[in-house]
Every structure is written in structure tokens, then in C-alpha cells.
Amino acid sequence: MCPVVLSSAQTDVTAIHIVWPDFTALHLDTKILMVLTSHVNLDNTELRTAFWLEEVAAPYYGFNKGGAEIRLASPFGRQPPIESKSGDADSQTDATPRFEADPVAKAAPSP
Image (cartoon, rainbow, N blue to C red; front, side):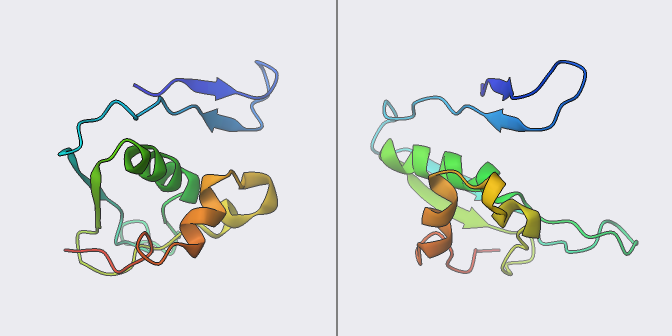
């Protein structure tokens, strides 16, 4: 379970920050499959879709710190699209630039 912290007034939500639990107690033989989207368009529309970088980067490094073997996958085996706004300066956390610079994390996912 991941508690969610709202960083705004109750009536006007401007930002949501997910507080991830400490995964350091994972067993060393834990294997985790993270499945990301393959779609760039929402259903049969022109609306764009993608994954939010922090939603992958934070748990990825939490699981990694806990000693888990992590594998990223997408349904069609191609590079998942990243939501462009998740790279904006106000959306950055410690994990996001680290993920962007990590060749292992950014490797092409498995189908």
C-alpha cells in the first residue's frame, strides 16, 4: 500500500505526491515484473497516453534498494512512451533524473 500525500488545499488539488514505503526488507530472491504501457494513443482516438516517469522511477529504485530483481516489460515489447510533462522541473524527484540516465532501467522492455 502506498500512502498518497496531497500538497494543496483540500478544495484545490494542485499536486499529488506518492510516498513509497521502504522496500529494503525485500528478500534477495524477490523478482518483480513492472508492466508499462505500449500505447501512445488512448483507444481509437487522437488523445495521447503514456506513463508518468515518477510512477515508475520511485518504485523501481525502491525495489532495487531492497535487493529485488526487476524487469520492465510492455505488452508489445517496445519502448513505453513517457508522459512529456513528467519530465518538467516541477515534476522531478531524486528518482526521475536517475532513471532517465540509467541505461539498465531504460533498456528496451521485454514483451
